[in-house]
Amino acid sequence: MTDFLLDPRLAADSTFIADGPLSQVRRMDDTRYPWLVLVPRVNGVSEWLDLDGGQQRLLLAEINQAGQLIRAQPGVEKLNIGALGNIVRQLHVHLVGRHDGDAAWPGPVWGHGSAVRHAPDQLAAEIERWRQRLA
Picture 1 (cartoon, rainbow, N blue to C red):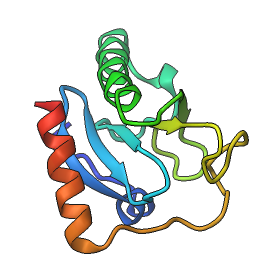
Picture 2 (cartoon, rainbow, N blue to C red):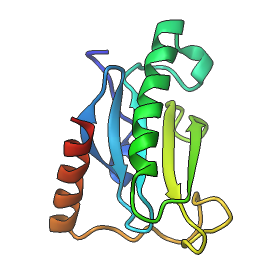
Picture 3 (cartoon, rainbow, N blue to C red):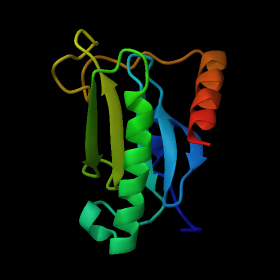
Picture 4 (cartoon, helix red, strand yellow):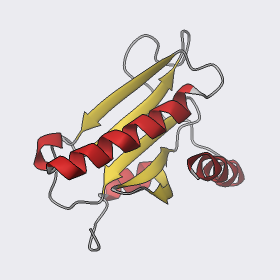
């Protein structure tokens, strides 16, 4: 895991929060949703099944922790979880807090409108809040 390379598209759309036991925890830069992304620090993995059993268990524990944090956010009524790897060819798990009436409700958030980016100072404060929650 020491030579891990994050796909540039994931890097451009999200901000690093912390390293978990297996994954980078990242915040999607879109103010419309509480949205975390877990990216296992394992190169060459695009599918859940590419991870060995121990890595799968670590990722599941990280998903459970991040999911509970998302569900605890104000207004979140539903948690969407999606394990992807088709476009960037790098396994990553999206956890998105949803509510009736959000920008994409009830459809998927992927590809719905343009991201509403955080102002730099707001993003820094947001990232710090997530770091405190993950500690």
